[in-house]
Length: 201
Image 1 (cartoon, one colour):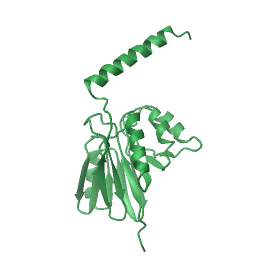
Image 2 (cartoon, one colour):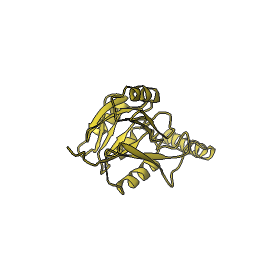
Image 3 (cartoon, helix red, strand yellow):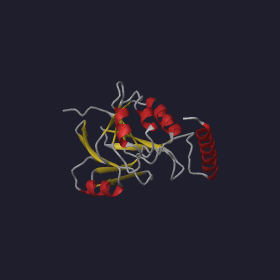
Image 4 (cartoon, one colour):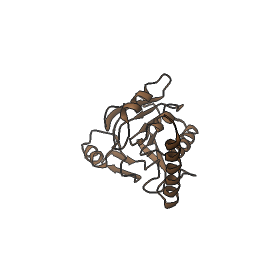
């Protein structure tokens, strides 16, 4: 039987960077990607409001830094949402006769890949893009959308036909992990707190 040719975008570690996830989705929309897998770390529930409006279905697992999971889940269940959230930090997906393991954690990824039971294992958490193989198993970290740790925003596109993926660095991305950005955020936080202190409740 012929394997259906499908491309899937892999994203991870958004870390509340709305600017970068919007740019990422716009880039993905230009391709023939049919699904998006998100490997965890929303950080803020507001990011889920962006993801649920995606024109391409998104399936997400949890990371270790997701903020209010119950609120994110509630948002994902809204009518018209294109975001589905799993129950844990890992899951198994079978598509086009490819068996894929999704996890947030690198150590779990390597252990699972060594089992020989999966065609591909995708992971995040350490924010470091990586493309390797353990035997015939593709072991992929798409890097971070948030550009918080490395200063580089990236995602990957996986092809079920070839069981391979390409990591793509995002142009015009911004990072929040710079002295200038941290100073600006402190200024914004001060202004916000000042407004709240003058607001009559």
